Image 1 (tube, rainbow, N blue to C red):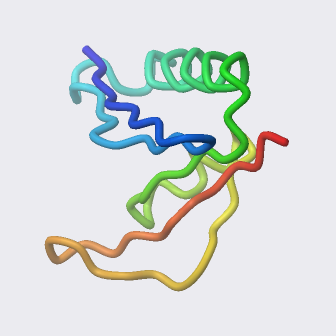
Image 2: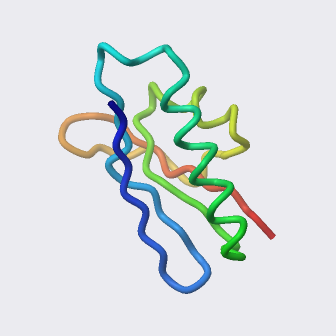
Length: 88
């Protein structure tokens, strides 16, 4: 249904490959998974959580407190932005 890869390097955590099967989207599953991940990284005393988000997904991630950092960039012909959440 949902998948995510989390890479932890010292005091930073990076989310990659976060996706939900289309037939399970808009049911809150991705939100639950992301909330679980954020709760886990906070327990680990991670200071910075970040990801590269498709530009169309920015409103989703903003609901969790992430903000856009830097300029949009192209990856595989899609526009992405780096999004960051400070956990200090």
